[in-house]
Image 1 (cartoon, rainbow, N blue to C red):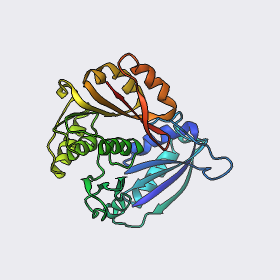
Image 2: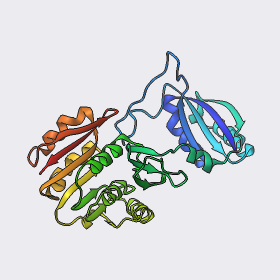
Image 3: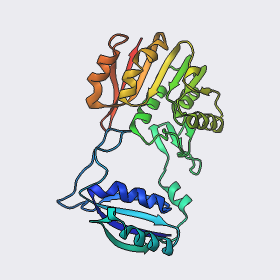
Image 4: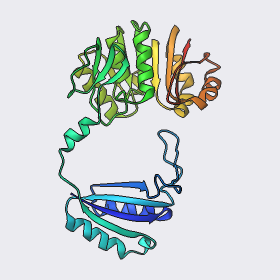
Length: 292
């Protein structure tokens, strides 16, 4: 493997990155060339949304190629293009061979939800204190337990009675649905607009030996004792009437994917249907719940 390293001004990042993709780069990453200096710039975007700009004032682009010849050919082709004006080829470097599977696995350790409830990748042994375990490997669907919103939802599940009918709306990997099933839910329905997420949920449920029903959103029929939705604030506001309509009278609505500064927006959106309160918080994210 070989890395082609480039320096580009902000207005050239997108075009150069697209060109590298077309030149069969295995991967393309963009870094702030001024990181950890007085000139460093932070780019903050809404979670799940694109950043406000494509690059920094000076961006370092790193493209990975299968061979040195491909990397050097890409460098030569880029330098001949008008859109490369103002950019610079820094170097072509050999990347040491590594066991990428093992390296990736090393980045995912067991995640504590509560002292007795853990999310454990299949290549790890559960901690000795674990009494309840979800076996889950990182995949295409959101929800590995590493994000605060997922952990807060699972903490809620672990500390409340979920022995009735449960809906996981926007299930991703199915981790919340699996948690509900492990904590005694009689029936669990998991739905998502992404068919890959539905498939991921079914596979993860089978791996954890729990029963649930997964499908597209129309599979959510009737009312539920608990409705879980870990999405983002904007879709949660749009879905307010739908989600509340799925909650059985006296049941619980549990919402996550909400930044602390979005608390009032969510309360206002759900005010016609229920009274949301903050039940948990972690790293700038909040969990909001309501009895309907």
